Image 1: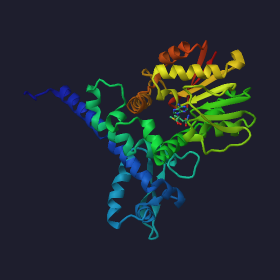
Image 2: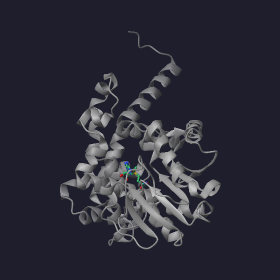
Image 3: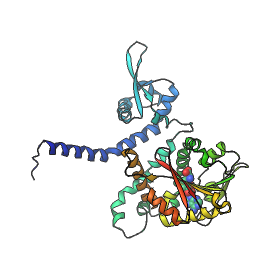
Image 4: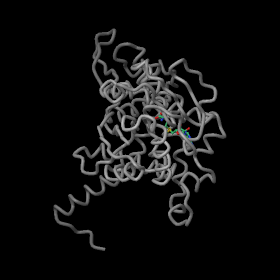
Length: 360
Ligand SMILES: C[S@@+](CC[C@H](N)C(=O)[O-])C[C@H]1O[C@@H](n2cnc3c(N)ncnc32)[C@H](O)[C@@H]1O
């Protein structure tokens, strides 16, 4: 084989190598982030109340003294990746020392805050979501309509969650964490909820979003509708109640149906069923009823390549875990019209998701 190249071919080759290696080792950044979350680095810096030096951080985390340099190297990667920032402080002896501070991204790992996403990091990077990748070649060659998760474990992800209360809690906590960040989107899109007297949050989990809507619009009668094993033990109040059931059979009646992070779990056939049941649920309001979908609308032509990459990664997660999908605007339009709705409006929210108002 001839490896001789001219300058530009060489540069292209090295670029290609860096590109490939970068994608091969991306998992290290994910795992370092997971370690930071498990160690509680963000909490330690937050609780310290001022920039924290490496020895202070190591001692606060109660690490073995032999691990200080290891912590430094994890922090170097995480700082490079934008999770921490460095500053200088003066030691008691008057010497300048490097100290770490939180960035907006690591502030999302501070526990006890409404914006804490630690449980999402925990759920998304849990071995139950990662181990399945070992059988992806087998999955591609099999003539079976099953998820990668099912191919690896012999059971579908919903059954896996439902048989073990720890896994179900982990999943619901991750969803609730994601939902809490929805507060800002509600404030920015108040008009979507104004005028409603009742709303049912279909497959609303433990009520993360419904609670935010209830806070912002206390007069709206909110119902969280989910599987009985998810909502069975939850209690609300006069205007926030929890109902167990199966959205593929029927959906409780309300002025509006909310479907957040729901339709991406299902293929078009099952999503159509959910949308038709939702249409039925708002039918008493005639043309004034609405279905509010919160999901990704993939934009492959976006100038923001990082955002599109995240949307496409989510699509593969939905595919491998649920045989679900993230949809493009065109795919949303088809699904919405196939379900018998007459118009819709898409508004980008939360950076990478969309709010889709759908009308009969
Ligand atoms: C991805 S989670 C979304 C939860 C919530 N909407 C949120 O954004 O936090 C999907 C939810 O669908 C619920 N679910 C699955 N199958 C269901 C069914 N047949 N009827 C009602 N809910 C169901 C699950 O229990 C889970 O809470």
